[in-house]
Length: 439
Ligand code: FAD
Image (cartoon, rainbow, N blue to C red; front, side, top):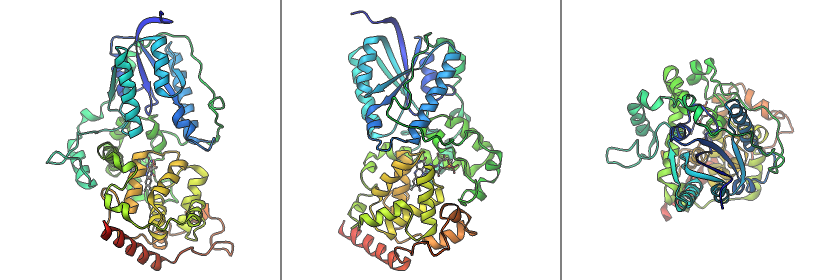
């Protein structure tokens, strides 16, 4: 049977890199010698797993896909958008097009690696190649290793080596624009609506993607204070690749070391997930899987709803529930409270954040949770327990952040603390001690 389109083509498969400019895999596809058809797949496996049909992530992706389609139309090509399980979609695409190669960018998650392996095998059976490139990180895989050639498990030496290795070469943009003539010329192809995908819009604006000059000048001083607009809120753009990490890191390198170093944390957790995939389900330090968690369902529920009686914890959880984002300092405080004060398995909290965060990223979320639980790389000693009251006094001294999210704070309507700090602290230390002794 002849294919509807007999011209040999290369596909560029978009995943977490939803932009045309400075896109590594797209650049290589456009230089492959074949006309390039850009493709995006709404992955049914992932969509089916989302219980809440008002999903900010999906809405963001959908908007980004529409935006890319506008750009593609301007240059006479079109994004091909499909819905389904990627392997099934590729089976169809192989029947429809004479695919010579598929280009894409690396993804470090276990699900993604398995998916890519299956697609690579299918393509290879059909005589097509699969090429993946580093795009979402500055350094990945084995680019930053210890002197003895193993992956780093502690941030500070990793970061030192990262900065040492950084040259302009790693920050250079890929000039995709120069090669736009190499896209396959096609008529406009349809894109399913959000409703056709089974979802409804939340209809709240997303943060913009320009880095404010104020931020770059004052980040170090303001970043820990959740009442201020002291962080970039670029996380959703970094998550889905609507901005280029190279472009951002270049700006950070010029203007603000502290901000650049946050991007190093991001690379660090990607490489942890890549090298130690067991972290997805287990403690990085296996002995921490033996902590005797209390796991009280009703206490977990109070934490989720922001009704713990600790105002900074409640403010954070309500911010998360209402806007799908929480300030980093408060992520650390709420996560610590769940693991230490309530002795609830960090994986419960991780899963709740995964459901709610608009910037949810397995590597950073897992890294943050394991850091808070003390079970991960770079962990502080387990007997260091955040005091949520002191944290609030230090980082929200006027209670502005708290009052924004917990309006009943300081009134009779506000709930009593669900657990007393000193008792909870001692209980956590004892339980950790017991768990680690059993290991
Ligand atoms: P900024 O302070 O402006 O930082 C700029 C960028 O640097 C961020 O957008 C992010 O990409 C990166 N970054 C900053 N801090 C970290 C960090 N500690 N680890 C990795 N990358 C970092 N970040 C996510 O992107 N997705 C998550 O799912 C996520 N879950 C977290 C869970 C916990 C328990 C904790 C403690 C942290 C988590 N973080 C996560 C890291 C951090 O809280 C967010 O990246 C940050 O709050 C996003 O806001 P921002 O863009 O304004 O950050």
